[in-house]
Image (cartoon, rainbow, N blue to C red; front, side, top):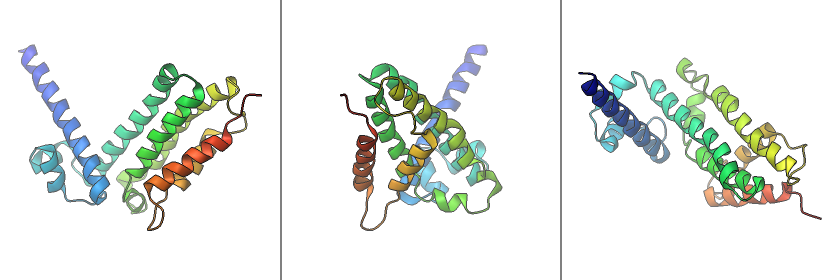
Amino acid sequence: MPELVGVRQAQARRTRDAVLAAAAAVFVDQGVQAPVRDIAERAGVGVGTIYRNFPTRADLVTAVYRHQVDTCAALAPRLLEESASPFTALTRWADAFVEFLATKHGLGAALGSGDPGLENLHALMLDTLVPACATLLDACAAAGELGPDITAYTLMRAIGNLCITGPDYDRADAEHMVATLLAGCRRRAR
């Protein structure tokens, strides 16, 4: 019997992961107010499965957001370990952060909606991602690649501002400007 329970838990985890991945993709295409039936179809599950796992839209948005924040934060130490230099790790992490920001189509409106289920998302991002970025900045400063005066919050806010797209400024423009920002922050070897 315990083996059967383990199989069911694994299937439930796979279903939940499929729903989160589908919701993230649909949110990119349609925003966070996308119909639940579109998310269910993309995940290959019924609408009832989504509501069983996420009773409200705020629950689903929060779960997607939390999963993406945690993934982005976990990337920082891995990149530090894998990259040739701390600055390379920072650059790669900034690319992932830009990707994270670019996939938040409609989230700004949801955050300002007054829905109490969504009010903690901004704090979640800051509490999780600022320390991850700070780890990268500290490593860059220790290696002499960045000055110690660049703070994680300020850098992330600058990147966030550069990622506000519009009719004449798209994601490619944002990526280019973030790369330019980071290059301008870098200390050159003497």
